[in-house]
Image (cartoon, rainbow, N blue to C red; front, side, top):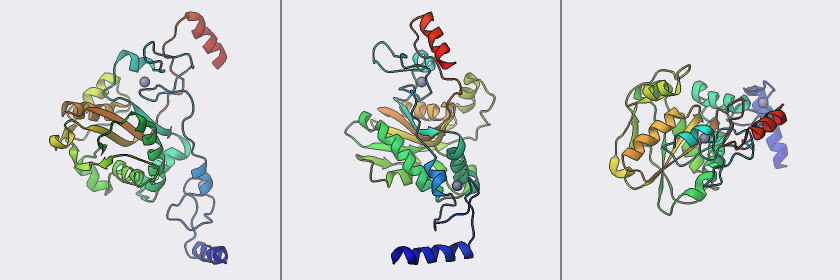
Length: 278
Ligand SMILES: [Zn+2]
Ligand SMILES: [Zn+2]
């Protein structure tokens, strides 16, 4: 009976407001504020390959272990200790997930935030065993005031809010949006070297309320981890302001097409791994 009524309502709705999935173009069958079909959402999967235990970059081989911790680390995280304890991401920044993020960010389709928030909550759940007993302040990567006016909302903040509403997250997570600000607009990072990206970001962020940060664990959240320069700069600024630890969670992460070799013991192992990878 109920489903019959819903069916009639859905048919009526589809007649009155015909709409297609913004990802695959198939007609939407269910009433939803999100213009994306269930199949397209269901097709978005979490990253399941071996990744760097610190930054989440894709790794080439399961034998990539650090001597001390027994955790797999990419070459970059072994050479330079990142300013965050660990960065977790839900999915690879490609396909449907990339499109869903763009719907929110560039097309202002705000209902996408609830789906992305659910994914962000899973990334945060990955970090939870590392959190201490005290409160963890959730700090969305801020937009510059001008960008914020233009877009009307900060996608990192609305996604963080949606994530914190998920019942799956336990503990003492507290949204702290205003503690970090973006002082200046930065040019696109595309095509810049790692050093240039870091220079480009220098001074972009500032802590506005030091007393909120001092001695606290901070979780920086953003929609996408691309090169890590943005979240690393946020983490650096927060650490300088006295944060005890900084963690990073993002909905998506850019994964290198070629898996990164981590610690490789012998030339033979490299050769056999490359042979196995074809
Ligand atoms: Zn679809
Ligand atoms: Zn790494």
